Image 1 (cartoon, rainbow, N blue to C red):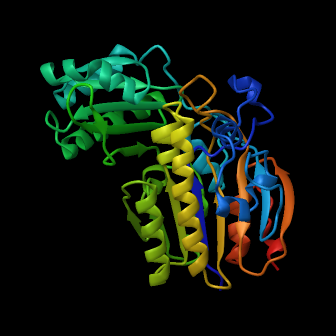
Image 2: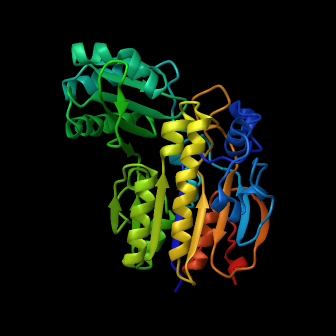
Length: 385
């Protein structure tokens, strides 16, 4: 039976979604606008896979030569990684997670401080790199932890490793997770950093503490049918560990793709699910289109290596979870279509147009594994024969 590799390139939007106006994202196009900012992009694997047929990308031909190509709009409310990944996994959410653009209520912070023994500074909407530069010295001097949020439903705690060891930061985030459940906050995120003033650097020991999906996903469905699934990157942070056979932490996209290729060649799992976070974390939120292009080059090379070792019957699906347009003047996610690219050796290439839910992916994977499709999306597995 065919095996499937699902790759979520975090933040890789491909144009404003039909409801982009509701999110203030008219004109957003993460991939296309990165190309406008950098000129002609040299991404031969993305070009081969047909990304240039999804949206106008300078340097990529508008051709579909070896893949099935389309784009998907999101049906879920909200605009963050949790809802995006859950919908990719087949679960559409119609209730927004709570956001706190003016900071979190004092009663929530007081409860966490009382149990954890730590006080907080900050508590406002900010870019993660900016706030550690703004408050890093005070944090080092006082020992108080840096708390901030964004346009997403995230409760983020930053701490220097000289002040708070990573495992201790995780413990405080677990305490925070329990209290944040009462406020319907999507994710609690540990943000450890190192370095000195004017050179603080966040590390790859970031960890997300999410809410357990409130329904079935492709992971629970595959588990029900006895399939072994591997999560790479922050998959377990967003879905939990219950339905994963194993979960592997990564140190960036290059490392994540190397792990994926090694694990795939070891042939120990039926389903491989990876999130590549660098484009979002390092470049999208920091409004850095030049860096975003450099990150795309790393992924382009990794995809080429993966395709070269892919068995004839196996399938790669590539998508995104939202946009984070680094040219739009804001540091939050953007409401965009995401790519829906399916690659298998020797298939008939085809452009399949637009879908109205990310859950088309879960439905497609269900049909690939010949298990019951319980999801609301439309399967594209019929194009594989």
